[in-house]
Amino acid sequence: MSALTVSQDPDQNWDDLVRFWEEMEWPEGSKVEIIEGIITVSPAPASRHNVIAERIQRRLYSVIPDDWGIFQTLAISVPSRLGMLIPDLLVAPVEECAEAESHIPAALAELVVEVTSRSNAQHDRVSKPAAYATAGIPLYLLIDRWAPGGPTATLFGEPKGDVYRVLRAVKFGDPITLPEPFGVTIDTGEFPVD
Image (cartoon, rainbow, N blue to C red; front, side):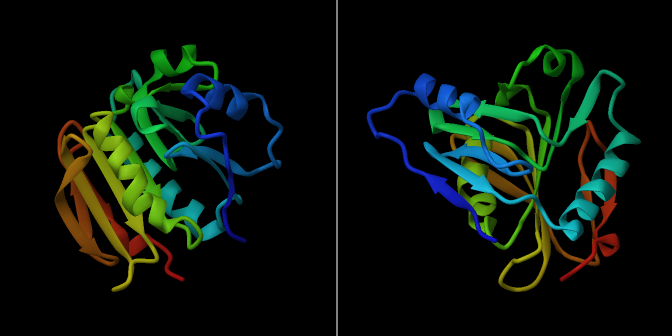
C-alpha cells in the first residue's frame, strides 16, 4: 500500500493547515503528516520496519539522560517548511513533550530517526532531512532499507540552513556510532533485511 496525499488550497495558511490535520478523522493506524504543505497519509509500517526501530530504541535507552524520552508517534512542527512530521523515533526532553497536546516544536528534538518504507523513502531522503536541518535538530539517523545500492544507515549532523553534513554512512552489517551526547554504537547487522 502506498501513501495518499490530500491537496490543500495553496492560499491556506499554516494555522488552517494544522487545524485541518488535527481535526480531520484519519484512517485508524495510519501515519498522517504534513510534508512541504501537503497532508500525507501512510499505512502502518511493516513488522521489519518496527523491529529496526525497536532495536535502535533499545540501544538509545541505555545512554540517554533520565529527563529525555524516546517517542514513536509524537509530531514535530516545522512551520517554515510547512511540515508536521512524525519521525519513527524522536529523542526529546520528556517535560516539554508531556505538555504538548498534538505536537512539539522540532527544535526541541535532540535526534530523529527515520526507517524508510518503500512507499515513502523519498520523503525520508529529501523532504524530511531538509525540514529537520532547518529546525536545527542536531542529529538525523536515516535507516534506508530501500537504498538503490542496498540497505544503508546514514548519520547526518551539523545542520546549516536546510542541509546536513553526512557524518557517517554504512551498509547494513556494519556498526554506526552516534556521537555525544549519545556515544552509542548501533549494530546494523541486527536489522532484518527484505
